Image (cartoon, rainbow, N blue to C red; front, side):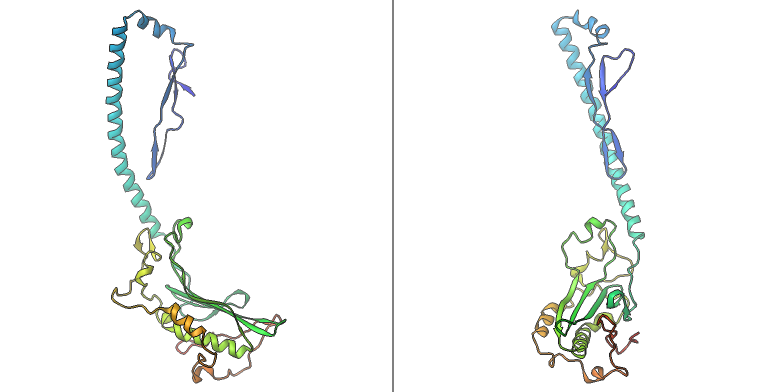
Length: 281
């Protein structure tokens, strides 16, 4: 708690909460309290006045207070508009500084732990085939996600509730590596149209996901609004119910590789999904 004047002030002033955060907030909160240790010289002349005179001076002082408060409100409203401009400029800088998404330029690349990835500026597909020695089966996990730009505020990276997944399957069981690879090949064939451009158009329903502060990120375009997007998840759910023979890859893609599929000492495959228009490795 601070004093107005340490030598002869008759009141204490608390203004410790005053502050400004540009583009966000101003705080002006003043509290005055009586200082009876030093008030006597200021109070003595007033107590000699009549009740009516004191009340008259009090009402006049309140009127002046309210006039000053109105001026403060006017200045505050001017700050409101200026702070909003500051905020807008900050959001523009966030947009300009948003980093480019990482991708493989529609090429299959091996990541850690036997995970394979193909990606572009809009989509990312990953898969992993692992061997369960105890049960002598192969487990296939895969998924396709939207490769959206990183949001400036990670706390609100996806606060609008959109799912980042286009489709996915976890730990699907197969008796052999060949069957597992055929399944993955079938999944890729189903979604290969997503990996023909470096920056495929963004589905309209995902616009916010690919926007920075409400503006579509640089270099992206939206799919035509009248274009009917197929229900990819429904198609995949249907295909998942079919036998492996029904979903096997075309004969051209099913051809055995020049070398047999090798496995690491931990049972993980070294194979990858083949791709007609792009080299596998």
